[in-house]
Image 1 (tube, one colour):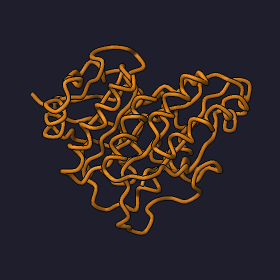
Image 2 (cartoon, rainbow, N blue to C red):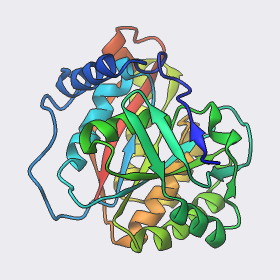
Image 3 (spheres, one colour):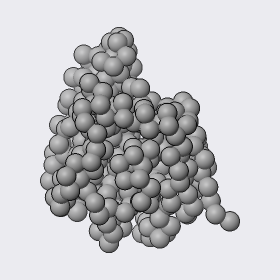
Image 4 (tube, rainbow, N blue to C red):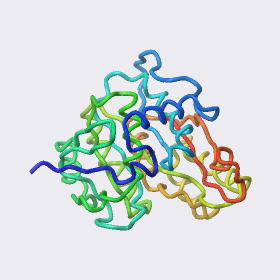
Length: 281
């Protein structure tokens, strides 16, 4: 029986009708905090190893996310996107992918690369097959309509949900993904928001320090700053895994395309969430 994942947050984090969703995505790209132009960019052969992208409701983080998706629209030979996100619900296996099947959004179906999923589970003992870990989680789901907007549905995904995000786990996943990705025309996406529910100025200052580590792909510094400054980024493990894999694949830096907070978009600066879009090359 073919596995089918229905959207968990359509109608909440983004519109649940295709026309409204397409309109929301266009608004994200054209928003004053977005890139200001729709994709695609002219084709480029410059390697892009990874993307760090936020995952809140499109009204808040969509414009920041749009910077990253417009940047990768220059690619024309990627057929697999490995998307790692935190497990906010704590349901299911500590690190989980799925065997295959399709994921639905209002823009259509996207297939899971079952061969890549099997290879990852064989390569990395930490990763298990567990549909339940993904059933209610939004962090991976909200990235897919952006990919569909840019690349239509002509790609596959490898979703990885991480409830366990310590450094050892993240680096082990990153090294295993390096082996999976180098055999394919693939790119990595880490789904994470940054500081949660702090005043705008404090959140911005803390996130600025964490982003220094991200830009240099320094996993040691990443975990040290998280600990030292008590930064509440929810997808710090996916970030570290993608940084690890990208560095091993030849990546040397992550360019910060855009940073903003929910306060700058919604107007409430007293308690914000930080969002960043980074391109790893």
